[in-house]
Image (cartoon, rainbow, N blue to C red; front, top):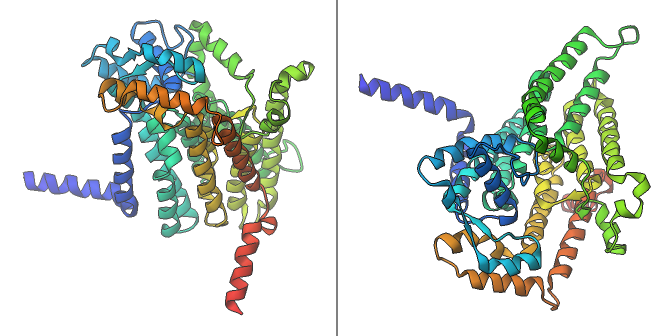
Length: 476
């Protein structure tokens, strides 16, 4: 009887894993890497607000108790059960350690805080991110397999799950952009199957993590309208009205979940207003060009009457509508799904280019769609790799890799904190050829150039031209 039960459990497990058997080994390797580095690394500037929000939640003040956490609430809601479970075995006061020796270097770089979170706390908050990495990879795999074949699907999963930028941003630094990216991947997965209730749910969840998925919501709304329009009243077919209702219901369900935060927490309202009126410009966005010519003046302060931040988000909203029109251009042909995927990719690129600040972790919004589009345009693989490398170089050039090692130094003694401080201070204030400012500027503008090439049609792509010319020579 026991043997039969064990055999039944084994059969059920293998049946569940059967769709992913080709990538199982890669998944295990990727998970092992993440679990090894997650406890002992962090970006203290980002992770300390997580600690503050969790400490406030455990004490009954709520996520926005001291208004140190400056994002929509869902990531902290997702993380809370993991931290709560940890608090049953470990005193929450031991989740963080103040390091006085870090104060001077923190003031110098303005990208560190002298509060270092413990390995157990780091693992608790990064576990959802590791799960998010895996789920994003699996959905990419399923989409590519459905649209192409198993070989392309395995290739896409490997490129994602062993990607150094994905591992660095989530499992090392603790930034949660992968969760928002996951919701947009799930949205395109269900959009290709025309199950718009789940599209709305996915994008609603994404908006509770980061604001940008709301633009995809409008994109899909316009796509549905254009696909189902009629020449006479009521202008949209019955099937189209049903799909619109599914999308709205999915998004509305998620909106209802945040009403308690609006009602009970002024901090949440303050965060939303702060995020929609962001005052930093630069990174991989087009506004870095402004910084090149006028480094001491911000675009919004130079033209305060423009209400620039508001105009930027209006421009992105208009762009989402325009990409929707482009996506349905071939609505009756065999290329519609290709256009829908490419329009998602180009909209993500548009957001990165236009929004005030595009940091390296924001590249995770775009990278999945480059992989999903890979079977149609192989040239996107080089963009994917180049942007991944540039993103890693950007993050490491901010303060050097030493800035990630404070948890290991504080709680294990594997590294000397004074040595980390000295190396970061030397790098950040160096006047040598490879100084902090010059390295960062070079990386940023290299990334901008690569990002802009994503929009190039293949016929204008230099690398595609060289590859085709080489292929013609080989056949002659």
